[in-house]
Image (tube, rainbow, N blue to C red; front, side, top):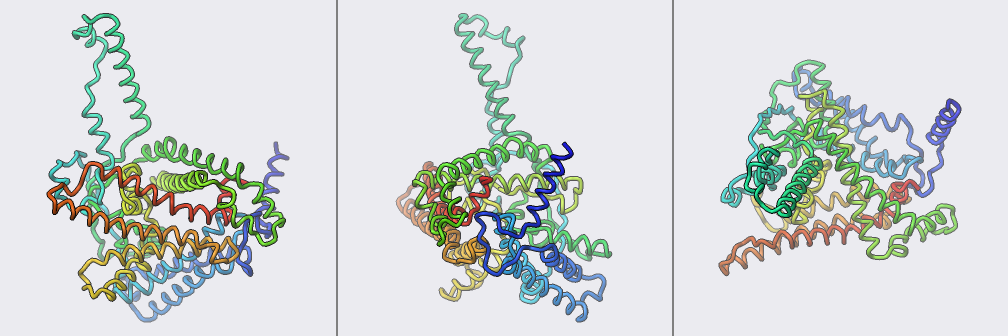
Length: 530
């Protein structure tokens, strides 16, 4: 046993220090293996700059001297973040090299936003927000109230967990054996009594199975958020403020909070038990099932060609770049696309839950506050817009807002002559999706030898989804107007089903571009542990 452990540690050490890129990884020419210093310096300098960004006290923070030091530190951190994916790669992993692109671009954009765009363009420095959560009774809203409620006032979605209460309340109360003996059923013929008993047993088993799968509900609460004035007050407060803002991608605990966290006062606080149940019953099984599909597809269709390319048997790498279209039949392409989507969704959910469990002892501090990552169940999504607004995570929402949504709205208003108070939804949607297209194609480019044309798949995926949201909105508006003019109800019972078919076709159809990019880059190969 000691010799086996020693051999394993030696193998791991050799893998870590090996500067040669792993098979299938094609880093940008001229980049070098990521060093410890290059990885640590950007977030460290960013943190030091954040210590000087928090509002006073002390008054010296507002001095020109402090602001100059702060801006120099921020500029240095931003440059180092942007430089990460342009100068380095992670030779041991395709996925980590891809993540390096996301981290570098996200970190650099975040620094520019926090230290230059927000303070100088909007005169705003993020303020700490104090959350107060009061228990609430979870009851379904009356039908007439649902119809007259504005879409954004309840987050645009129904109560995600009220369907369970509705289901429970519609079930007949369970009775014990003694009560059953006294009921009229006892006088029925023996075969009818057995049938009734079997039906009751099956119903009870179904209820128990449903309860086991659903697990404990998150705790329903009413949330009140209040901006804390005069904070931070001490050096430890300032250190805490800087750390919390640096780690909070969704701005939880600050006035930067993204829409998926602050779009409704009615929210849910997942408990540790709820998180554990989600990990064991939902995230891990979905992750395992989708991985099995990905691994099976890779082994059956892609493995031989990919290995040949990795060994240099195809000098122009055409084989590895065209595997998706040449080796996979259309049904398998769609299957792989769906499996990759499920894998990513489950992986995000698993990571979110594990961090929430690990940091739960820090409650009620902001670092322990993990609002739901997905604000609706995937089978309740009925539009493409609904999927991206409520069915997918919003971890990059602030980046897309500042660098995509706001510029898109500005361009639409300039082109159409709209006022600042008028909605510019087309520019908002296209700007957000195009910024996402650039971020993801920039990242996958880092594992494709810096080739932009090979990285175009992810850009096309997000661009097509943006167009789909715009078309979807226009068609919905036209159909509802047509129905209203002819005296029909604006919303029909079958709209939801048509919407579900529509968004699945859009996601799986356009998602083939995303999957194609991941096959080209070798990410599918690495996920399959090959």
